[in-house]
Image (cartoon, rainbow, N blue to C red; front, side, top):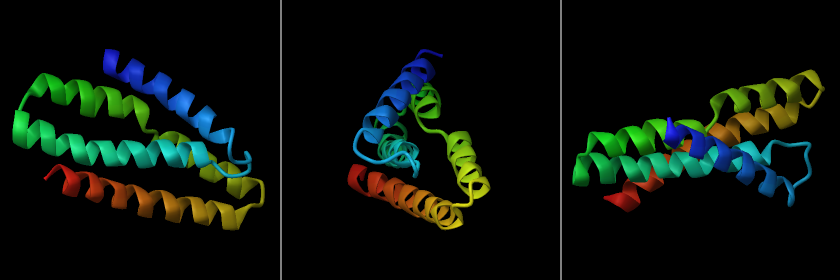
Length: 114
């Protein structure tokens, strides 16, 4: 629970920080958080499962912290809000960037940890 609480607070703070540099018409904060979280889950999964093999660390970091930090539900709501406000191109861009970049980030995290 502690990992989830910490991850959730950091998600909010990072998303707000990112929005200082990008206009609010596109959910860059959510994209940035999910990209970083995807990289970290790839990286930490290798470290925790292959090198440390510690279940408590896995629960804290992968399930708790990163579960609280990343947010598929906010990504979904952001995309629906773009669609309902008539910004179909931005919605499609959000889906493609989010899925593509987050998968790439996970692969990169795994590759760097190995």
